[in-house]
Image (cartoon, rainbow, N blue to C red; front, top):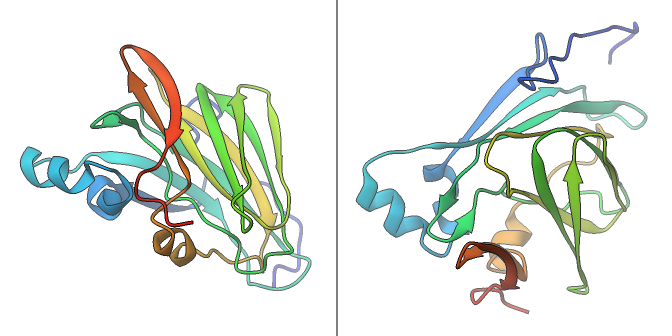
Length: 189
């Protein structure tokens, strides 16, 4: 347990946080989440970085908070825009807060009743993710999409439920030069 207050430096231009734990997600880590992910990752021979997470995490104790930034690269896998893995919290009664720092993206939200919401997130925008809602972010811009997040340290992450459902019920694609939200054909209701 952290016993003393502290500060860290956040560079909003790059999204990097001094001394934070870095997690890198590449296409190979997420190929199963994209409709054409396996084909693209196998045929291209390259393994691009989709996003990075800079996180200041604390022991999973009630009352502590974890915080950090996600830095999403611009790009697509097939027609689908780069996205995060997406997750529920293991403790469903916990929420999360995002603040857009740079770029533009969409926040896809889906609850266990398969109700779906989509929020636009850009510089200065705050997004509240209520308890019980799975969340995934998507970079729809031409540059990096960077946002700050904060959530209870004991919330946990449940990625497995998303995988079992075949992903979120909707996907974000580029179709004839336009951004479209469409049904995910692999989604299992």
